Length: 149
Image 1: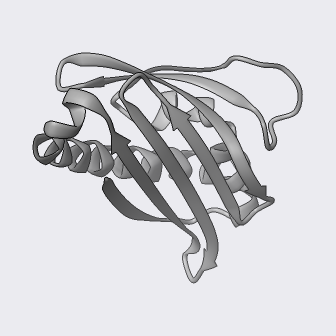
Image 2: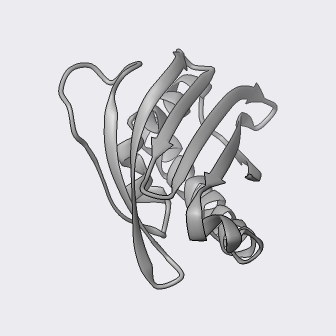
């Protein structure tokens, strides 16, 4: 199992950050490794909403289907992801801070098959993806902060 956690501070109200991040299709905006992320069902964006996420990892595309598993408005978003050789749990914790909002993004990856044997190498790749994603999220949240002022 691989676990990564990144913290992003942004001058934006927690409810605006949560609304942006709840629609997981936003990863196509802030995560530079996401090739595509789109909603694959209909209805309100809430618990049960499903997304197809395609990422480019180490030159290869990887696809996961994510489902919003838990949502506490303005506070917590949890998603479960399933792919052919990986199960993921992403948790986005949103807290008010002295700068506006602190987002703690935690991701757990459980690999199976050949991917599991490659976990030491994947750990390094996922660390870089998490670093790049945190930078992209900070930029996107700053952009939203300017738009809602």
